[in-house]
Image (cartoon, rainbow, N blue to C red; front, side):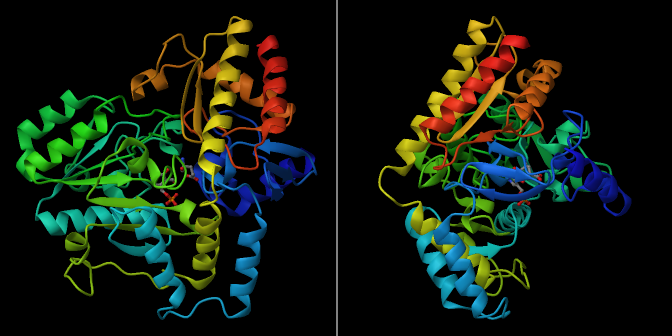
Length: 426
Ligand SMILES: Cc1ncc(COP(=O)(O)O)c(C=O)c1O
Ligand SMILES: N[C@H](C=O)CCC(=O)O
């Protein structure tokens, strides 16, 4: 890791913490982050030339694996025509049509540049549409770093021990109610108190920012019913789960129809993209048809649209999602069997091609408290030993893992063989 160490030292001179997004800094697990040179299929290659099987997959978007030939080709062709026009293109129309076709609840779609922009804009729309100020989110869910949403948040905010960030005026945060994930009673209680003031519920339909926590039976349906009862908007944040948990996202997988959906990195095939959309009646409140302002100089960027269209076309191949789910289940169950063999308490969760390992004797982890009570020290040892064996997991125990179409049987078996060596010594 000589080169990574040198680059990290240099990086810290001019980049806060040496990274452009906190979770990359390895603060949670200790040590030096790998600096990446290139990626291909299931692999990352670091600056020192070492190869790793990658289960981060750029934090989710690489459903097909890294550097997929169809996406690369589409990007190269788009680049030939120019990088940005600041005017509408046919590719944006095709993208909106394709997203609406694959996720039918998204009757209208607005493209943005990140997941943060998508959730921030969807919240503004929900507030503008309902004329209400309060929003309800769940402890440990992360929806990007907009002020209203960085309250009891997951992901890097959790690893830094600042789930609610300084710099957010108390006046802003007072409108954000936070309740327990997978606990409908806590939602009902909040609505019983101030339901008529709540513009929306925003939820990760599979929580992927406090490790991987799928919804318990009836949870998402219960949220739908509560929103209907109180005239609030249900926003599914599918930045992570969209086109990953299933072709139609978690909403297709769990059979739930939201009013608004947020999408992110997955629709860009690796380019910086996000989107929000939903019922046409609500979406028409966005400028220029409606009064709720939202804009973006680079939104709908032609290169990003080309990558996204190629990606959304390729993921429609028959059998892809069955294969992804099968391989993910095999991987997760394999980790658990090996942990059992070596007498290490471990619980696993998986949904579609997302998975999570918890070093705990809790049989099924369903909420934030259980996730943060896991054995962090054990995870950190496991993390570094897996790295030595050539397996790159997310550098924090609060992040979901991702399997791509490039993670075939051989890759899964190699990963489990590495885990066997590591867990035997833990
Ligand atoms: C569920 C969820 N929502 C929103 C975001 C924010 O997306 P971005 O980092 O692209 O701003 C993320 C990830 O970062 C996410 O996992
Ligand atoms: N958990 C985050 C997104 O999914 C990690 C990405 C980041 O914040 O850099």
